[in-house]
Image (cartoon, rainbow, N blue to C red; front, side, top):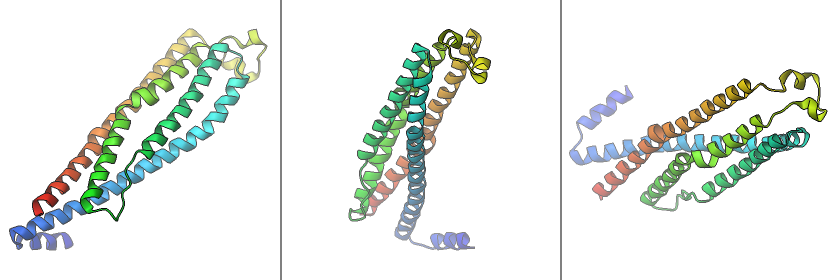
Amino acid sequence: MLEKRLKEIWKNSSQTEKIKFDLSRLIIDLNDKTNNIEKAIRRRDITDFITTIISIPIFGYIAYIVPFPITKVGIILAMIGFVWGIIKRRNHNNNKKPIQLSLSFRAQLENQKANMLQEIRLLDTVLYWFIIPGFIPYAISIIGLGDPSEYGWSNTIINQVLPMPLMYKIVSLIFAIVVFAAIFWVNKRVIRKTLKPLIEDIDKVMHQLAHEN
């Protein structure tokens, strides 16, 4: 009923009133989309931070007990990659423009647009700051796995897994490639389906504001 009533009001309005009505609707839609995206980004950042903080000591312990030198190098590189990821996200968040209510509405929109463009740059370069720093250490760790009996390293679980046949190592690397390729695709899809349309909506509202003034 409310939607029907709003349509009737819009049809019976003057052209100027229709422009104001459309602008109000655009602003409401934009506000909802922006809030949802910002919440999703915050959840992602918090989840990634917690995962990283938990992973670093675990990987450190594994690097300490694993006897294979090449695998140790891979695990240490993975830990460095975790730290690099934290630094990258921290710099990204520090460079975001604050959305202050004391600013004019147009200035707030400009800051939102700048933040979304920055988010696009972050996701667009995921290959360099996440995928490559993640895949290379994993590949080195898998390739470096040897025969634990040569190092006097033995227990029931380890003896069932190692030494790992070459075919298993290849399958593990192919699986990792598929996973990282999926991560790359998801980030590109978020840019195409979510962030770029949001920027277009911001531009529409800014254009309407300029037209109204």
